[in-house]
Image (cartoon, rainbow, N blue to C red):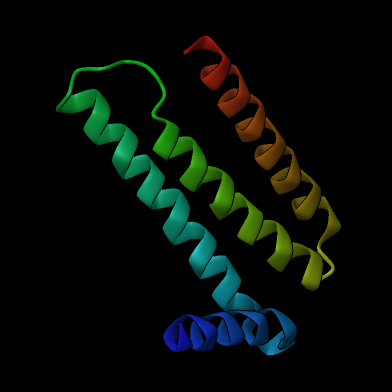
Length: 100
């Protein structure tokens, strides 16, 4: 529990320090790239041509981090585009979970 608390405090501090916005972009891009790796594995190794729920979650979280970084840097156009990406990822997740 203490370790989780330390990680959470570091995360909150990361969001509050303007100079550290680059870390948000790095975290976001790592999540997005991880999602793509999951999706490529699913398509090439498992031979499944549908969207992986893991891909969509990682992609959505990555875009959310990019959104936060964009808005903290007052980059509204990229922030809105990344927000749209998050919304679309959520919509696809909802559609996929309703199908099952």
